[in-house]
Image (tube, rainbow, N blue to C red):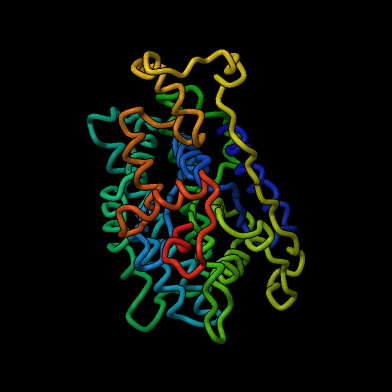
Length: 360
């Protein structure tokens, strides 16, 4: 987590030197290695809005965020510079919704005006389907200020200024509140490169969409962010699972440049494989796996962590539910995902005409 936080702060610092195209960066790693959870955990330290992309019929875990679904509809509705303006206006609505929700929780007596507790509560909110719905309700209240059925109700200069001033205001509000209740909130000099983060998870879906006469949605998002002033604290973090890292970081086209000095792309963060502390601390070859040991709950918990690294970050009581959701990955069929995994384990070759191949 510390490495990721330093990376996010570093990206904002790089953008501020006026050589980088946009406050847009990518975090990449294979499925099940905990990148989404890791990024969410950063929401306890910086203002962070989390959203997941999914296709319409995809019921994989975690499910699509309602505000992301609406955002996608909006950005594909407009064209050219209106599309870029619509992207920024939607991000502004999301930022305002986050700030309103923060202020509500901060004034709630059970959080005792403790910024750390409030930010942890917001992380919990973005981690659940119900919490995502609650957040989208807040976003919907903000949207009519900036969108009509056919137009965007704010000009670009006002939009850029609002994003800049709000991102700075949120950072300073959290710092001022945190300094009263949390001595670890940092010095005022630390605030200069603290970002307001909006996370777009499962962004590989956006790589697949090509609309006639329109640029790829990820490219459109990056072009919109290119217009932000360097004083802005907004940072968009794209999480990629499938596809090559370079796909998320396309070279800047000359015709995309409004600000000629900004030609470079912020470097991606490619997370290496996680290693559980226990693997380094204990001699695993001495473990005896037998019926007696398997009946010991603590021993079973240890074994679970040697599967996907994400398991060791879950409560033991939640592991089965999450594992089941991950394995099914949105499949309506009760058995094919498990059959696919079993087939891989025993080295079976599967006819490419079978429905099972899609699950694989």
